[in-house]
Image (cartoon, rainbow, N blue to C red; front, side, top):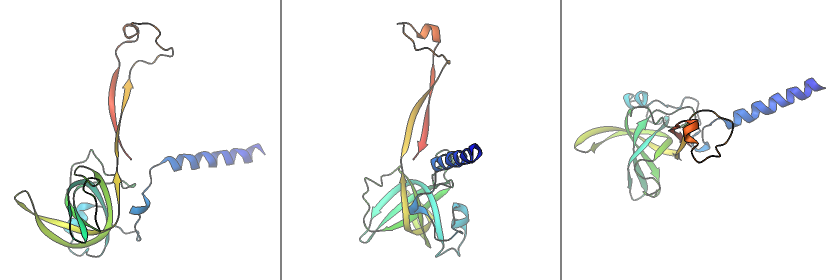
Length: 183
């Protein structure tokens, strides 16, 4: 009997731990398993028109057209949960067309986005005075990420709270670091 309840406890704990892991948002789930997720593979290929693509990065520019919105994205590699990697180098730029109006304040320059869409014919536009060949897609879904920062204080480990006026003299200086998370 104890062995059986132990198995249920292990299954319950495993389920709780796995549910805490980051997973791909529903709007980014592809209909086929062979979705393109690497920028170089997509931008270098000329026969990918009509294929599903999932890429992410930083919004560089948003332009509302009469029937759709054009988003210029600076590509960053994404992980299995679709989150852009802030610590990676940019791999290039791409264009996303989204049907309808998107508010430029919500989709502001500098926001992180991941897009699932269908590959279109590349287009040529300018970045400053430079003529750039943009890989292009029509969005089927997208997800805007929030960047959260928190401070973690690293210092000596002690078990009793400081009750005196000059505690830092006894416990020593503490150092902190800023942790950046994408949610």
